[in-house]
Image 1 (tube, rainbow, N blue to C red):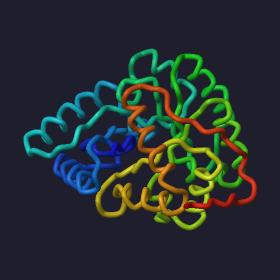
Image 2 (image 1 turned 60 degrees about the vertical axis):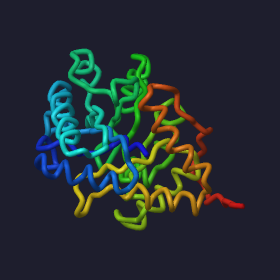
Image 3 (image 1 turned 120 degrees about the vertical axis):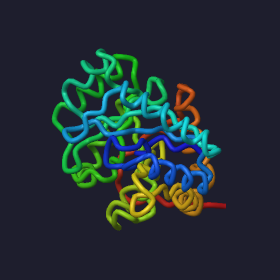
Length: 253
């Protein structure tokens, strides 16, 4: 299993505080059947992580995991909070795409979607990149106005739902919206967004068990394959997005 969103790098954001915590996270990931993790440290007003810092930390952590014979591979990624100069900084080689592919994470503020979002996501695609909106299910405006997310996905953006959201750890409203994003083909990846093993752990196995029971194994395969395609820089599977209306019924045989 591949986890494309994790704060496992030591001491650079609100994830692992040090190398020991990174090792603990890696061991927990291995217990869940994860063999590859894309490390995605924050870039926002609080954490000014740039590409070279991330690459150096990934190299450091991979060496530590090898020394302890922990069979987890760490790849470089980034979780930049959306801002107007994002592409300018990409051109300055300060933004890290996911494993150096065309896929780029974009995080929204928790309460709203900035007015310039549609234009920026369009510009990102013109640049030859594919934006992936992380944890849209935790954005207040998108919960209240899901048509905003439909519009962005319909125009080519991808999205990633957090495993813990799907399992109900962020509350019932977020859990229900996460399920709707799957039902209406508005998400393409499930990832952990793990920060620690205490209250922000992986929950990937639990999430995929839920997906299998509620939507069927085809959806499990889709999400797992998309993570593999992403790491390889290939095109991911995209079903036709639908506007969220009434709840659809799934019949699993």
